[in-house]
Length: 68
Image (cartoon, rainbow, N blue to C red; front, side):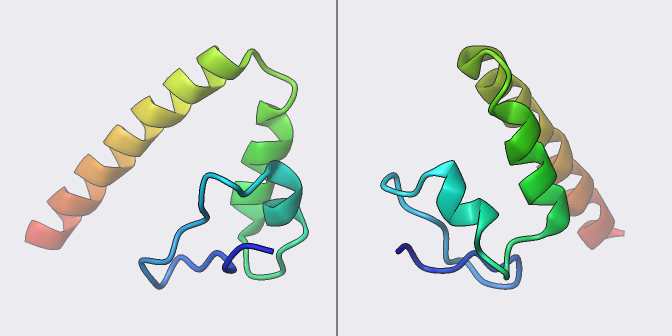
């Protein structure tokens, strides 16, 4: 199994990780698990595009908060 997800470290799952690894990982957040569960039923290209956009928004928001 892959290294457990933790929002407090820079450790990330690898390309070998699948959805089930994260969904069964007790250290993964409920928010992430819900997003993965919903993404499974979507077109993978649309889901990936939305995830990239959300990542950009969240990264920008965090940077703004950290510089205030």
